[in-house]
Image 1 (cartoon, rainbow, N blue to C red):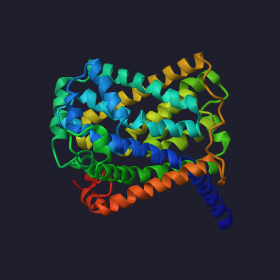
Image 2: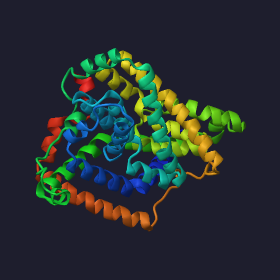
Image 3: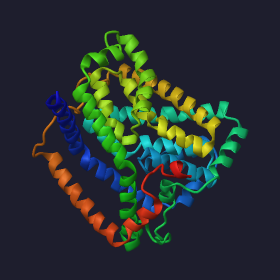
Length: 388
């Protein structure tokens, strides 16, 4: 009995390790680019662009979000920071959606583990959900509720990730962008933001990888076929976007950490649109719902839950219809989440280059007091909600 349990655990860990090795370089690349953008773009300039909910403003919010953080906890804190500094509530939420679901590293990992169709679907579904959210807020969210949410958002101190969002490394804002980036202050800022991002998201990535590895190793295919109604094509397509967000909420895994599990679910038979709804539902996992309650109050938390869920389901249906009509829906079972073992290929070379880059950033981070700053800001992205 004990030996069987040990073998099962080792099997799950082997699958987890293989998936982690496969996506390592893309994570490093994505977080490096995110850190570069955040180091040279002033937060005050962002806020000035997001003061209303006109279509152009929301498009700007989506673009700025896509160039920002990919951690769901950080995205929620950044949105609150923007809201407190004068951004409209709709623009702040659009920024939040884009900064956790329309970022480069997510697209790369989706392409690596699931296929380019899922990357394209993510970037098609994202704008659909953003438009739907804007319509929902315009029609159903009253000014009084937003004012109450703003009053609640002003209470308390900034959490650790919001402190990270507001971090300013004193880069000369008048210097050209390239000079700012390659200056001493620019290099320091990039290294600090890079490791702050990793500190915020690493736990969720590891949890997500282990959950995906355990599910792939332990859960039989028959369970998924029954859950996702795979024997009934029409019912499966209708059921997928409905059940997908619930699985995300129960998994507690945010942002990039849910991609491996999405692959397991697709191999198990969830619909194409169901995968997209599942991926976007990282913004309504239970810990983040509690953060919404802390930031904006119970009523706004319930509004956000209902609005996010409804738009994710509709967005999943839209993606299913669009990609199904174009013949772009890949066959289930092809996601690269169950292969075990390492081989000397392009992934190995890219990971070596990525690890060298991490080492160089680490030296800069250590020599410029990055560890002290991290301790001052706190170690957990939601630490504020435990202690305040």
